[in-house]
Structure formats: structure tokens, C-alpha cells
Image 1 (cartoon, rainbow, N blue to C red):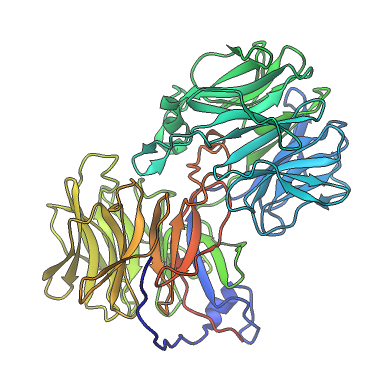
Image 2 (tube, rainbow, N blue to C red; image 1 turned 90 degrees about the vertical axis):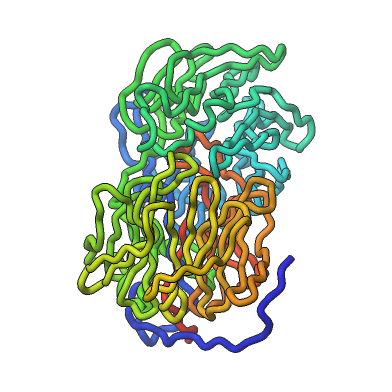
Length: 606
């Protein structure tokens, strides 16, 4: 697939007491990780579970935790609450009594375990897990602890639901998805299937060729409720909330429908704009569901207004359990669980970048690159945060420190030209002490995503003029420009290896519509392809010793139904690989988009 540089010896930087303190370690402590990767996430900061009366009133917290608890459901006998929690690291399945007592962890794996449902007899847990590499429905025998992959498919399966007699499981899947792209992002399409608990009798129930999700069995087992939408609505359903008009329905519209199993006939029970999600039977005729305002019912009555995510009613409909986002300050700074103990993870803001001495770092101010961004500077633990640069008209994106730590380069202007009209952007440099700004390029092109050479004398960056893009190198002192790469598809996100010989970048040159990661030798112009997946691989960043590249990839697919996560659920995780593309390892594992990794200065294993 690729060829390496050849053997060499690379010295590592000395341990930094400040970085150790950021990780919660004393300077003389044993360091469990050699590497620390910061990154940005579109996921929530804190979700808690609440139990309310059946109409959604009088909510009380259920086992509150400062991390993420979500996707709770009642057991059929109402004696247990099954839920997902990240309180001990990875996402795992727990259960507890409705009063919060008898808390028990049911799964314990580095993979993502979620969306659990207990069988009617209480003996078998169906849940979604990524332990096979993608999202499958698994079964756990609670007595023997035996595990079985029920669906075992290369695509994703989500939201398992037991039939009332415990013989069948309905689920949604994107195995039939045509995977259309909305600009550079995949648009997920799902259908409803059923399968017997022994794995036989697999049958597709819907043919929406769009979105069909969150199946729920009627009390008599004769019908399945679900939400549905045409494929034209799938893109708007997963837009960022800041980029659509929720009240007008411009975020996308779904309806609640019921499929009769005996005939295959489908009836649509709702109308009007807006997303209607998580349907569940209240009785033989009425279905409760969630919209962007709160709880609603198909008989026309309304519950309270508020944030109700994945509402699940008890069998007698007297209680409802749900989770909601409690918010938190963004950009954040939070150590988070890593699937690989060699690589510590810190969730920060967009495009995190550490000063060479590790004493300070910069991030962008907004939650997404498409928004207007300023540059924030702070201590590496997120404290003493201040504004380094802001322009009221132009966005300042992807700041990177110079090797001497005295200057910061960034793109200044408008970006995301693939979804917006062409807007000029320039490469700018700001002096960290004086705050003096120097704009290095003119406004005839869209230039962005700079990367310093190890000697600090040159900058590589992406330039775009209409539909064409290229990589160029500028001498910072003379402003002389040297072409590096052109006519290689859409190229972006270049950065210079610490050794100085290679520049990594992303390109969609291979023709499948997705971006892959490449390197180009600055001297010989030899190009090496590092990744080869049917997904976007991008946002790569070199480790300080040049041994690794951290990057974002959607190669393992979605972890959940996209419309349930309007914060851009692209299923994109943070990975690392060796500089030659070998030894690929996954670090994050969740339903949200993770992106723009940056490395802290190295610490030594003691």
C-alpha cells in the first residue's frame, strides 16, 4: 500500500512538568501514555437521564453524573432501568432500579456499547456494539454472560426492539443505503428489518429509500411504529442546529408511521414540518413521540415543552425516562477515554495546536469551521483563556504555532467554498507578543490551512481558485512561492513532517468521492498514499517526533441513526497510524463527529 522512509533514529523531547500536571500526574510519576492528542468533537458535554410522570411533568434526575448518561429504557416488568453510561471510560451498558439503587455494569469493553433493550423475560440484553469494527446488534445472556453477534453485517444496525413475545427483534440498518454525499459528508439512509432471536428469519420490512428508524412493536405484536422521511430530508436532518430554521422545518421533516406486519401496509399518523422521532406505543392506538419542542402524542395531545431525547415510557405509561443535554462551556478542555492506552486524549475546541514548549495552546472559538471563528490562546489545561485575534468580517481558521513559538499562522477570510460561494482568504501571521498582524497572500484566491516547515522559514498551504486547488510553499521572509502539488483532485489540510522531508495532505484523487491521506516528498515530489478506505480520511497531524499521524476517519460507519443526533452525526473517529500508513489504531468510538487532532509535546514513559 505504501512505502516508508527507511530506518532512522528520532530523539524525543524531554518530559514537560506542565504537561504532566495537565494529565493529573506529578513530575516524578510513571507516565502511562507517551503521547497526548487533543481534538474537537460535535458530541455533547454532559447528558443526564431523568424520570418523569407519563405526561412528561415533574422530572427528577436518575443517577446524575458529570459525564455522559443516555439512551435509557424500562424493563418490561418496570423493575429495571437499562442505560448507557461513560462514567467509567468507554460507553457501556448499565442497569439500576428506578430509584437508582442496585447499579450494575452489564458490559465492559473498550468498544462502543449502546441502545440496549431488555427482553420481555428479562434474561437477554439486545444492544448495539462496535466491538466487531462496525455497529452490530449483539445479544448478552445475563445469566451465563454469553455474547453473540446477532446481525454481523459490514454495515450498521441500530435501535433493537423486542417483540412482545420475545421471539423477534426489529432494528434499523443502513445496509441498503446508497450513501449519497452532502458536499463532503455522507448522508445516511436506513430501513427497518426484523430477525428471530436465534438469527433466522431475517426480513426487510420497509422500502423507504430514505430514512426509516427507531422501530417499536405494538402491544399485540401486530404492528411496528417507526419514523420515516424521504431521502431529500436526510441531509437537512443532520445539519448543525445553528445552520437551519427549526421552526419552519428547514432542519428536515420526519413523520410517525405504522406498518402492519400481516399485510405490509403502512399508515402515516402525523403531518406538518419538523422532526418527529423515537415513537413508542402508549396503548393499542396512541403513540408518543419526541419533536424539537418536547413530547407529543398521535391523538393530538401535547406533553411539556423541553429537551426530551429518546423518551421511553413504562409499560403502564405512568412514567417516561429520557436524557437531555445539560450543556457546558464551549470550547471545552476535558481528558476523555482513549481506546488505546498509549495515546491519551483531551477534548478541546476546534483545531487545537500546542506551542512548542507546551506552555500555551491555541484553538478556534466556534464549534464548527463553517462558522465565524476567532483565535483563543490559553494554558494547556484550558485556564487563563483569552482572545488572541478576531476580525469581525473575516474568519480566522486553523492556527498553527511556528517552531520557535513566537508567531502563529492561520487562514483569514471565508472557507467551506464547497457549500458557499467563492470567498477570498489569505494566509496571515500574528506575532504572539506584539499582536502585530502580517497578511502574506493577496485576495485573489482562497488560501488556508497553513503548516510551518521545521526551520520556521517556510509555510505550506492550500490555495483554491474556483474549482481548482493546489499546495504551494511560501518563503515567509521573501514571500517567494514555490508550487508543490497541483492537478491532484481536491487537496487540503497540508502539514510538514518534523523531519522536514514530507508534507502530508488529503485528496479525493482516487475517484470514489472520498478523501484519503497522502504524503509528498518535498524534494523529489514523490507521492505516497497512506489510507485506502471507503470513507473520508482527513485532518491529519504529525506527532512531535514524526512517528505518527493522528487523523479523522469515518471508515467504521455510523454508530446510530443520524436524525437522532442533529449535531452532525458523521460517525467520524480519531485514529492514529505510523508515518508510513501502517499500524492503524482507533482512539475514539461514539456516534459523533470527531476531528482536527493536534499533539501535545511528548512525555517520556518512566
